[in-house]
Amino acid sequence: MKILKKLAVSVLCLGSILSFAQENDLGAWYMYFGNNKISKKLNFHNEIQYRNFDAIGDLEQLLIRTGIGYDLTENNNNVLLGYGFILSQPYVKGEKTENIEHRIFQQYITKQKFGRFNLQHRYRLEERFLQDDFRMRFRYLLGFNIPINDKEMLPKTFYASVYNEIFLHLDSPVFDRNRVYGALGYVINKNMRVEAGYMNQLQENRNRGQIQIGFYNNIPFTKN
Image 1 (cartoon, one colour):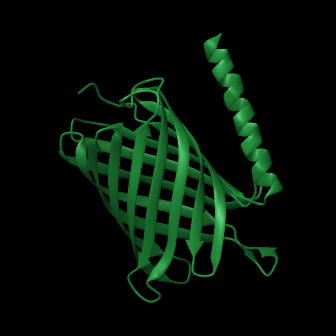
Image 2 (cartoon, helix red, strand yellow; image 1 turned 180 degrees about the vertical axis):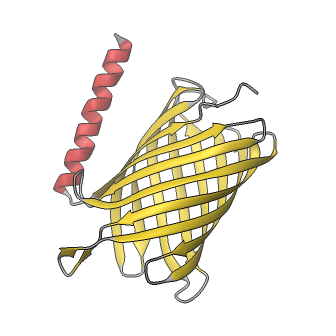
């Protein structure tokens, strides 16, 4: 009965979020993140993001990322080499166009814990192969996960999630964008969690909000 009540509340909340997005012309991003151990030190990163101009149906961008990471210390200080495929469908003078980008990226993630605060620093360098251009970009993300109804990120724990990420070109103009995010998450079990939140993206001549729904899967592919 408790599970059914939680499911009903989740469905109602999701419906409210989607309705809000439609009425206020917000974008909506639906995201899957996999970070699966393939050995004691190695992990397989896999990610799909379906981004819409509205709540659903008007595709803005489809992003697929994958990569192999290596832990420099036990379950921390991860270096990763990855590849991304990005299909974008922007509007140009009222007409929808299509662009494809291939992206190679290198990143370093380090985690820290201070009381209830679970911190993550992510440094990422991207080589972006656009249809008519090549660009390099640096990104830095500082994120926090803070459990609410428990002292740790244990199963059945609700938590707050916030981050700020800045994007900088390695040529002019240097500033690309900045993202600020806040969400409420739920730890399903030790390997899975979900989040629903809001992200504001600030660019040089644009400021737009996005509703985000994310699912995180850390089920290991190995017993080691």
